[in-house]
Amino acid sequence: MSRIVIFGAGGRAGRAAVTEAHDRGHQVTAVVRDPAAHPGAIAGDVTDPAGIARAAAGHDAAIAAVHDPAADPHVFHTTAARALLDGLRTAGVPRLLVVGLASLLPARDGTPLMDTPGYPQEYRSFFLAHAAGLHVFTTAGTTVDWLFLSPAGDFDHTGARTGRYRTAPGDAASRITYADLAVALLDEIERPKHHRTHLGVEAA
Image (spheres, rainbow, N blue to C red):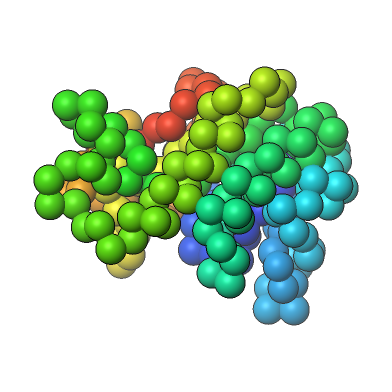
């Protein structure tokens, strides 16, 4: 049994991770912006390294499934990336799983999915903001063993948990449920196989 702190525990991916972790017998600290809307959670700011360190102290691993629709995306994701690395290092938390975007994954030919023909471009600035956050991780000299994990394409918003998934390159047609993404997240905490990279997963 591990102690896992989950930042962004009020969102769909975060809630699925909380459920999966609880079901496996782990101790979970759920961190949200507004705990009044989420009984049992604590308040936290994922852009505040000192607050992250306080919330994460004594934990074995962290999951971040964070988004702030009120913030500038580029500022939020780069600031959150630096704060997570700094705060978790201070707290001595060795493992971090970040829920990322499929658009940043390489397709089968190596082209970033967001640059493939026909890929929707209306949210490109949002994709690039996430890419800037990922760049913070890939260029950081850090002791935190991080992994970005994302759907290989998009979420299946209505499907149920199957407990099965497979790794996959970026593919706009690929789907995975939130519950099965949570299975992949917890598997990587319990039995780490991938390190300091961005991994896509899809339904198996």
